[in-house]
Amino acid sequence: MKLSASLHDRVLVAAEAVRQHLGAAAAQVAIVLGSGLTAASTRLAEVRSLDYAQLPCFPETTVAGHPGRLLYGTMAGKSALVLCGRVHAYEGYAPAEIGFGVRVAAALGVGTVVVTNVAGSIEPALSVGEIVCIRDHLNLTGLSPLAGANDERLGPRFVDMTDTYTPALRILAAQAAQAVCGKPMREGVYAGMCGPSYETPAEVRMLRVLGADLVGMSTIHEVIAARHAGLKVLGLSLVANPAAGILSTPLRHEDVTSAAAGGAARMGELLEAVVARL
Image 1 (tube, rainbow, N blue to C red):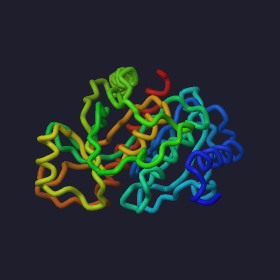
Image 2: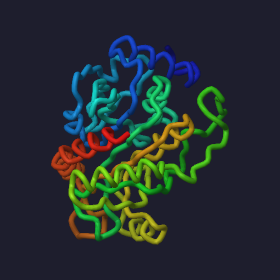
Image 3: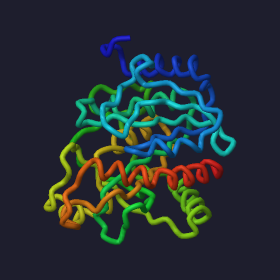
């Protein structure tokens, strides 16, 4: 199907392909794994796999740490759809395409999505390797996946974002973290930037004034699309590095993905504990 077809129709075509190839007819939860976090998917059992490139209309990943693979299986006894990797605005994708994967999950009947990412810490108290529950976000990309003509088949024209990150899921995640890690999981505000350049120290100081605790280049558009589709949302950030200016060390993507790989097992354990409590 051509990109000129409506977003709604392309989502349905992709969802039907997922049903046929993976048998994903009744997934209970969808999980989006961010940069370097693919190893968290080892918590999935009875796995069936398909590359994004094999699915019609599905945007393909181009960034290291995002393999572009869709998995379907069971986690903690529940059926789960796992998106290993995502696309970003800085790859040239329109915001509506960035939210394509979560819309496919919604079309498959999923009611809850867990979005994960690796982020820089603006709040100095947050340490590298720590997993933080996203309480709220700042969309500083200047873009929205809902811009343009609204298709009521996908969701309403105007979407309330008061409780973007579902409070009940945040409580559930806190309980899971206490059980898995033996300590409380902190919450924070995630600032979404366009990238692909890392933020300047001045921008990080600005973000701190605005109330951000974490910063990254993803998640925001997926979450807005998910809320538009009526999904409940939980967001988890793995701290991969102090943001620019917090330390004098230059930021490199290799270091970010390395830190993410080091924390992927913990993320997987936490995800399994969260899914078990759904």
